[in-house]
Image 1 (spheres, helix red, strand yellow):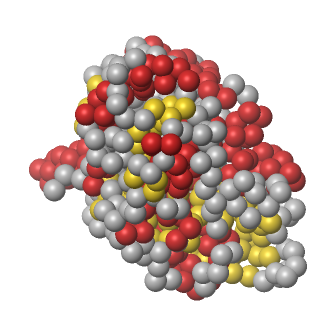
Image 2 (spheres, helix red, strand yellow; image 1 turned 180 degrees about the vertical axis):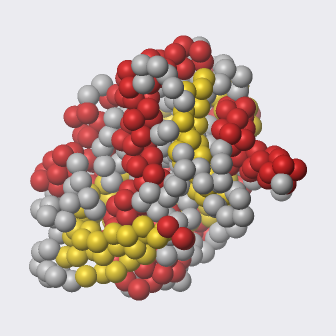
Length: 526
């Protein structure tokens, strides 16, 4: 059965009157509209169900109110929009109420919380933000909750999962109505905890406005999305809101970079700080010991308390992913979940079995003549440096990197990304990621210019101009059994976007196909 987001719909939502739904968002509505029952809200005109209200927001090119007639024909009972949208909707002669609010985007999430009866209030909820590590930290929290016996749903970049129903996500954080609808579906399905990954864009665009989480976490701030936020200070300001009393009373803040330190110093919530990289850091908890378990591609570490009431307390933890960055994510998740009452031993048990789609995902282990092949979402200079340095310890031979970078996204990180690749990997395979509307050759040329700054002779650099599949195939077929291949940039993404077309593509199954060819060749040669 093919799962779509239409499947994540609650079936037993009690209707709310239109008057109650919009109370506080508009001074008054026509008396004849007040008792109209509303059974949900949506910002997507093609997903409206009979009985729902349509929230029409102005876009860069089109105002969604132009679809008022369409949603009316699908059974929508009201349109909620701004003054401009109201003019557009009424000009179509719709018969359903058109309710005007000052800012429908700001109102969308609170309206959805009201329409779907505040589903987050019926579960334990945690949310995580940061440039890198959000998804791994979210999955770590999910595994911890589940080890404690709580049925747990997750909404993340890698996937959305509620019970047995799962689908690869279309974005990190959904628009407010979709998010609340999925949470409400989770409540109906018996979910007891929800883990939500929150992007800076989601905070800036009010997608979680009105929500209150039991706990939130901040992982780090690194070079990304400056095409939207322009400065790192603006970027931090957006993310910092998640660790404010607007959204929670308890936060875990990683202080391994200056941005986390700034956030912790100005945070208005009760918070715990943690450092995974500096045992001498001024933090409530620090990682004082970490040992990569090469045989099991895992890491053992000790989390030590430095402030009351935990001075000198040691927690010995194993995370089933290798590398310092995963220790950081696991430490954050440990403090996040134990901080809201989940037993420490259950959390440790969850972390010891952690697996994350497209995050240091082991496609092939080094055994029986097969190379180690890893798929990881690393797409910033800092994240790429971290994973390459981690995998150097696991690689007796050569480290091969298959990478590219996104089109129509922050171009200022391209040269730094390429320089890191040239510094930390042995053999580079430069390919396409999601070119989108940009010229793929131009993107690769920018990467190659960064590589050339580090390797003027361009030794061990191969530009693959055909397709990403070819780059993965060539890299895997070129390795020896003691080499490692790391494929970065896309993680669990199920598509490759080229000129507005989403082509079905996932790095992990492609790599598995190439490994089959590698094994077959080795068998023939043997």
